[in-house]
Image (cartoon, rainbow, N blue to C red; front, side, top):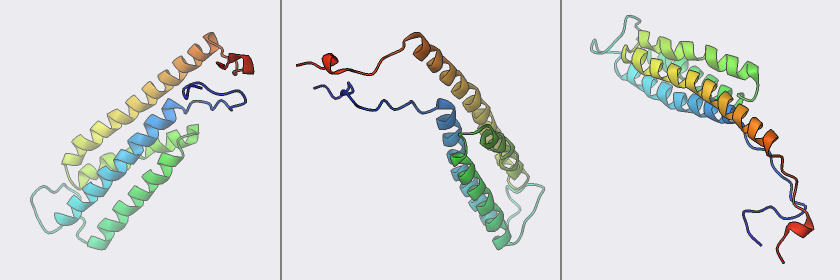
Length: 150
């Protein structure tokens, strides 16, 4: 019996939502972005080079703020199955972009991630919609015993 065909009685699992996968992945990538940006802010706290208009001199404050944003992004990456989770993910783009006040390069990198977020929302919704249209047009019935090769 072929491994790519379900056997009779197998449960057919629904496909995972592309929208959820794309948005979750984007938020998880932003976790690494914020972690590394926090490391940069921490390492530049005593330097004038590469700093933005907002200055945070205290290392514990830098790590707490960065850590809180990392945890928020991690939690939101798991909450992308609902519209509220996606709305919260959209709001979470603001503090990521605002890190540019600490390190100006984050305006560029954060802006790229905002574009990726919008693209993930649009492309994921489109893929899910096209999948649903295809599945509606090509209804498949579960396999029966007579479908299996002898």
